[in-house]
Length: 491
Image 1: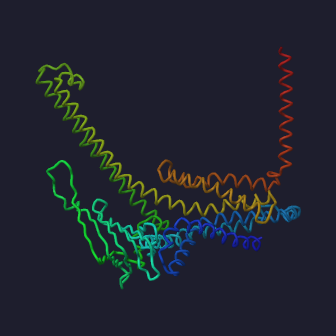
Image 2: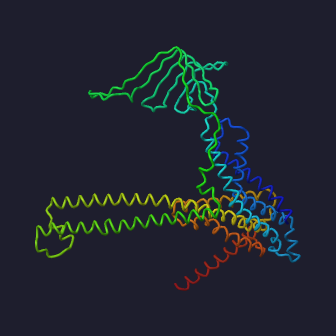
Image 3: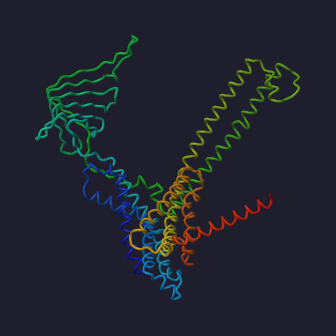
């Protein structure tokens, strides 16, 4: 069983890694294409990306391998022969169960120690690639915006590299201070240190807005000065660093993807203490110095003083009664003051909520990453107890039906897991509930399928379902006849 399973597992695992790697590459294709990076950098990117998709490819590979393994055994009646010899399904699954349990433990340690380091290196590499300037390839007959702050149009291009009919929009100082340059011809090339572009223009004109130098006009109509320049040769130097500069990995040191379980727990506990202290200070400030104490007493004292000035013998101390004694002007002033204070207090509360929200978001990200290390490892075990009994029930081997079933089950798992992740990320559910949602849904399915396979249930046999439908139909007709006879007897 181990020899059959492990061979299929290695094959399906490599296939799943390749498929997920292509999906990841498609998501970041814009960061790679046209940058002119070396082959070693691309190889490094693929290695780190492959390591990153391993936790997601592992459960899918286990599901597919177990389906094919037990499907082949069922299709060749080897499971029937073993059961006839008195070997139960649980005994047949025992060596694979132990193996999958060890793989699940290894998956946790992989996610805890290897994955954080690879993710730090991968995202550092992605950020570095995003900042790298693309290769200079100016097309003919269309505007090129590959140079930051410039749009360049080239009418035609010679074999020697000379550009003709140039239109250049210099937007580096903003749209209102843009410069437009027209030239009959020109050349563009890199400086010796590959950090700048040197642009030589011949026989042209330039138009520049002088919005920044505009003085205040006394007339109502605004007039924007501009400068026009005619040149026979003009040389420009443009920042365009083509070197590949790596980011320092320390910039991701405090991110949740760079930490193992122990570091995540420490970070969560530390930020929880800070958030609790901040929340306590804000609530105490509200209770002691804001509405509930000082402002309320001040308002009552003000109303008392006004009421005593108008009526030396007040009948009560009720706020509404005191407010009614004020003149209309005083009432308007009091209401305006109350509204301003209420708005000010509301703004303060919103600001305090934003301060707390940063801490809560930090805690949620770390808690999600902590639970993910366990849920992905546990998913390996769940998918085995779905794939093995399902393969024994359907009794179909090869790469046909098992692949279809595996893809459907994995899509269901991915949708449920992604839904729980979003619920936890947006704080609509507790973090543990959102991250363990997929396991809570699929675990009963695995237990049910294992029970059905162990009891030789014809769960997916069409003939059995037809028989059950015929029995249900006969029972329904029998009940209908009984109800009809009872209705006639009552009449």
